[in-house]
Length: 175
Image 1 (cartoon, rainbow, N blue to C red):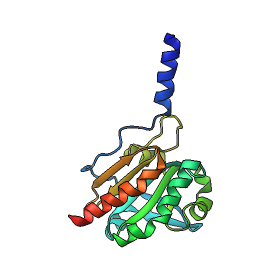
Image 2 (cartoon, rainbow, N blue to C red):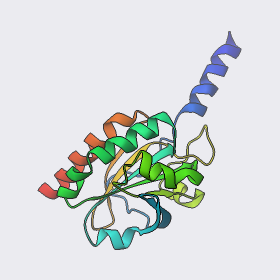
Image 3 (cartoon, one colour):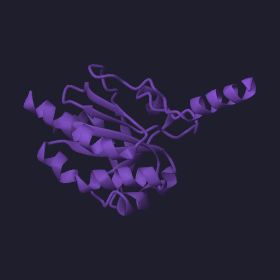
């Protein structure tokens, strides 16, 4: 019985996402990443993007997995809401990065760019997935124009990330 309990505890720990994401009020680490939008290569530099408005940075585990496809499609369907609030949306992953060009068209509907993240950025944003080295957990950040984390949502269920982040962007604009 003791072995069963220990096995269950170990399995739960290995399948859980990292729980130490950045908190509101902390500085957002600056970064430059390479990726794709509409199947075409693009680059992104956080400091430059923040000159235009807040950034919604959502991490997802891996391209072409069911939850990540649903999350990307949800952001794509809602992109006009973010744009109306002056926010830019970007997706970032550590998993299946060799397939991001296709993912950007098929599941992101070419509405926003997706980028490959390296271990350094995953560590800085505290999004390493414990059970899948190299992959990232499902965490969304809203970063304000002062390069501060304004909102964090870390939940493996992909369906609330859009609602939570658009509400946070609207709250930023209401201040």
